[in-house]
Each structure stands twice: as C-alpha cells, then as structure tokens.
Length: 269
Length: 270
Image 1: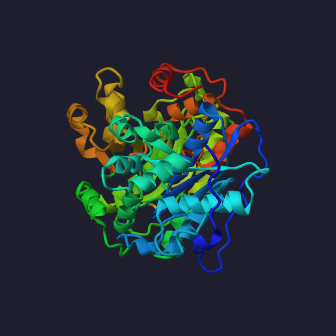
Image 2: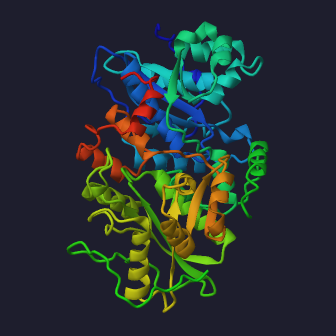
C-alpha cells in the first residue's frame, strides 16, 4: 500500500489540551522484514469488556501466524458522546474505563481520546488522524511508514455490506486505503458481506473466534440495571469504577437493550 | 430444606498430612438470620481455572438472592485428585496453586479446599460429606446453625447424572437428596430429559440460567496454549502468568475431547 498523501494539520480539530498518546507504541521493529502496523478499534465501549480486549489478542495471534505484518501498537478509540446514542455514557467516563482496562490489564494497548472529546467524527477521518499522528508527526517507526488498520467485530462488516449505510467514498477510504481485521464468530456466514465488498477483499482479514465469549456491552448494562453481577466479564478495575460512580443504574434502555431485556424475562426482577 | 445431620459415629475421612480445612472467608455471622445458610462447593478438574468457573459462583449468588431463602456464607473450589489419571490433568499442586491465585486475587469470598486434590480419588458424595463434617461438626456451623452444603456444577454434570449407569443410585440420592445442586443452565439447552430422569430429587435441583454465553472451556484453553495462542482475558492474569512462567500445558497429551475440538479448529494456521 502506498503511503498516504500527507494531511495538513489544520484539517484536524483537536480537543483542548490534547496530545496523541504513544507511550506504548513500539518505535523499533523486532522483525524488520515485516510491515509495521497499528490496530485501531472504534466503538462505544460503554463499557469496555473482556471481549473487546480479547479482539486485540486474537488479532495479534492472527497477524503472527498468517501475515507478514508486525503489530507496533493497539488503540481503543471511544466514539464521541455527541453521537447521542441512548445508553451512551459521557466520554469522560468511557475514556476513564477504557484507560483503567488498558493500563491495568495490558502491556501494549492505549486509549486515544481524540474522537471522544469532540463532536462526531467519521471513522474514515479517525483513521486519517492516526495516519497523521503516527506517520507525519512522529515520522513512523524507524522512518518506515506504519500502516493503520481498523479492528472490528463482524457486525461492522454487515453494516458495510448493506447498501446505503456507508458512503462509497468512506468504504473506499477505510477498506481501500487502510484495511480491516474482522473478528469472525465461528459459524457466522460472511459470504454475503464478503461478496458485496469484493472490491476490497484483499484488505479484509477475517480473524476466527474459536472461543465463544459473547460479552456484549448491551447485556452488561442490562445486568447492572437488574442488580446482577458483571464480575469476570470486564476487568475488576472497570467493575469497581462503575459501582463507585453508580453508572448505568438509570440507564434509559436503547432499542437494542429492550430487545435483549425481553428475551431475558426468565430472570426474576 | 434442612440438611439431615449425620449420626455421631466419627466419619472415616482420610486427611492429607499437614491438612487443615480453609475457612478464612467463611462468614461467621449471618447478614440475614431469617435465611438458611448455605455453602457452595464446585468440584472439577480446574485445569486450568477460567473466568467461566468464577462466573458460575457469581451467577449462583445472584440466583440465590433473587429466587431463594438461602444465604451463601462461603464458596469453595475443590479440584479433583490427580490419582484420577485423566490425560491433560496437571499435578494437584499446580491446579490448587492456580485456583488459589484466582480466588485470592480476584475474589473476596471464594476459597480453595485442597483436601480432595492431594489424596487418592474421592467420590463427589464423600467430598460433600467432608465439607459437611468440617463445617458443621468441627466448626459447629454458623452461629450454631447447621450450614447446608450444596454442589455447584455446570450443565454437563446433570447430563451425566441422568444417563443410566454413570452414577450409582446411592450416590445420586446422597448428592441430590441429602445435599442438592445448583446447575448452570445454558440458554437454549434442553434440560427436560435430564430433569425427568432425576424427578425424584427435582426439589433439590436448582437451575441457574446463564444469560451471557461465555463458554471458556479449560479444554479449549489448553488447546490454545499448545498452539501458542493468547489466553489472556479468558482466565485471571495471575493464572496466565503462572502457566507461562511454569511452561504448563505445552507438552500436554491431548485427550479424546481435545482431539475432537482440535479437529474442528483446523482453520487456525499452526
């Protein structure tokens, strides 16, 4: 993939006091013959769970066993709360929880609050921001261009293959210029999605998920509303943060939450 | 349901050398004295202990609080003896150590009892009798009240119990009749046939619904380790570190179950 055209920094709006976190970005390759990459996961992370953290682990294993890439860093990029999704906590709380999770349970993951602390930015622009900070500002790794790659669950690919959800330009930008690792649930049928996105098939990497570990943030919020334990579904530090700050108790359920609540009526309230 | 007290004949329990019953986290006072005090005991290989095992206890606590008049005064993991000679079973020392790392560092109420692990194989019914003896006869229960010992198990246990010939009728009556079991019921699984076969003890079988699919089996974890794949976030970090530092499970001889699961995971490049 050719290096991107350098973006002028005036095109990016930064939150007040912002600086790009890179304390865990490897600046020296262990395997110089491999192409250096960075993983970026965008999402609500409301709250972050062990499933989100596992996605990064699975991607690293996949990269090592199936590609000529070397992962130099991994970022969690929580969405802005200007997105106004029901059940979405303040950016501050979500960034705090992600930071507790990554700093305390990982040696290589980082949280970038750039997206979270301003008005909504499209995923394509978020990836451009990483491209700019890592390659233009920091100059890449040992002078080499680092490829920015999106990391996502299979639901993202489904929305991308639905006509009209994503603009053709953004698809080309995200899938063509950058690429994506999709964590693929065992048994899920990705053929239709793959067909719709055939043009960028070479840039879509399917990471098989062999251990079913479907800890959705939606279900976690449901459990908290019902006074049920979420220990061992998320890092302990995040569970404690939620308890201490009384988060999610008055959560107005999203449509998705209401659907899942209906299917869980077995629980006595 | 009151546990029926044993007669006063001293029970014939083999005690491993230097053994003493752990009870540092057993509640000594009830918070809700109108409720019946119970203790959960989970028996199994725990090779290794995973977040699924730990979740079972959390789910049982929620279920008990919302659906019963019990109060949980303690929870125990009881790893099986390695004299059981199951392939892939690590030494009792390693398994007890991993369980202890998990319970001491990630929980405020769970404990590990090594009684079963460090001696020759003991039947589950006898293991439960041991807990009954230690908690009620030796310690005198909680505030003088007998504590009911209840088994905590995954859904596969009830499956084996309903298969004719796997468990002796006496043991079934002992485990299900005298003690009782909380069984984690996977969403969508069909428990009707098992329930029918065990109808005699239906009142002592409590089905705890599992609403979040979190099927981290120890078998799959061992498979991952053999293939050099990450198991972080499937088990507590101290257990992952212990496995790495001690190079465990790398030369694991796969069991039949392991080979079956390995066949279905051929998608992974080796």
